[in-house]
Length: 392
Image 1 (cartoon, rainbow, N blue to C red):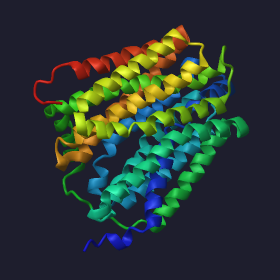
Image 2: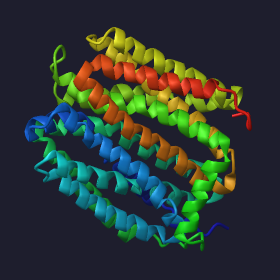
Image 3: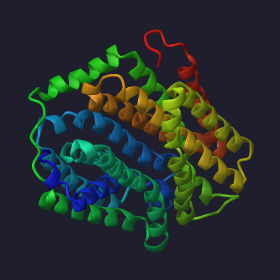
């Protein structure tokens, strides 16, 4: 009989799901409010573009640097420590009086928002084998809702209470989450006795030795350049002619993105039936076409909404198919393989935010759209390039 079963109450599953969702939401609160931040701090479009870049860069680095912690330490201690520090980083962002300080706080937020990646394996460790898939699915649903709703909540709150209130509210929710985690989570026995350095070196070894992993990480990272380039500049684009719309509208675009992301799991079934390569190539083509349409019709709100749904669908479907590939490479190294894939995504997002802010400042929204076309086209080339050592 599985001894974890009595400990995994429905309330605990809700805590895991809420923890994953609230933690990952910290990465996306800044995107709809960049226009308000720039206005309040007197910052340029290019300067404020470093805020989402720092957040995504911090998350990418944090995924790699903190991946061994859950194996080496009691995961409950890791969750409580990260949650406490994340609340403080969000508080620092809320009191920032310059873009420079906000960028430092954003880097810390990214590093510590990897807390989201601690809740999922914690739930899997406690779940009985017969319901592990259902449990992990429930927690991932919470994580997905955090991503999708964060922009809407942030944009609406900023319009009503100001952009600083977004960070203060987020700090409060993370502090409350941390208190609940400290009170309710059981202790977790470390699963590895290897040193932190040895575990980090094993991740580097996977990147060096596993060609399909490198291919998946590169392709998804390039798609993430397009994805982040759009979302990190959308609020600034909507604030200017011909749209002249506020933070709430920018946040509401998260609903359009949600439509595409919620449809994307169908890609998993297609990957099972026809193989992941079909999904990966079709997804890249969809992203290329979406950004191409944005470049041709930069002033059309209808085109913007429709293509937001389509490119989000393409990026999320590609991620699901790439996860299918990566998780099938080595069951004993799935967490480390996932760390490589996810970190590559967020390095791509960081680069996309930086490049898009520069493109927007120089060429306007057309420049951002062209960046998306180029990045997604390169991802398609990666997937079309013949694989020498693996069918994927």
